[in-house]
Length: 112
Image (cartoon, rainbow, N blue to C red):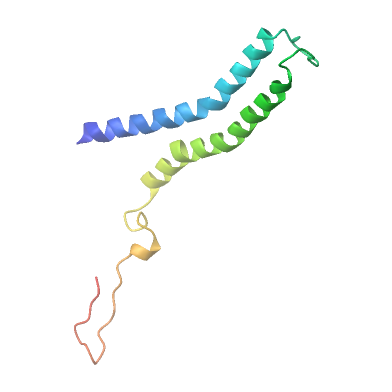
């Protein structure tokens, strides 16, 4: 059972690492495309196909803005908080046991 838990954790970390690599891959594709169509290393590029460069840059930047905090949350923060939480707090405040003191109408009322 411990082996399956370790495998599940490894797959989860690998999944979020691959998701975090998506913006990097998009930027590398943008860079290789820019070189392939003959754009200079810096400055403006006015060759056919260069109009897609801005779209590619915006896609890579938008992906990084959305994916990197999400990956950081699910790969680092959420597991850290789960290990740190006590057993009572792990299920949230609505899952705690409710104890009701006995009333005269029902002397042995205990809701667990």
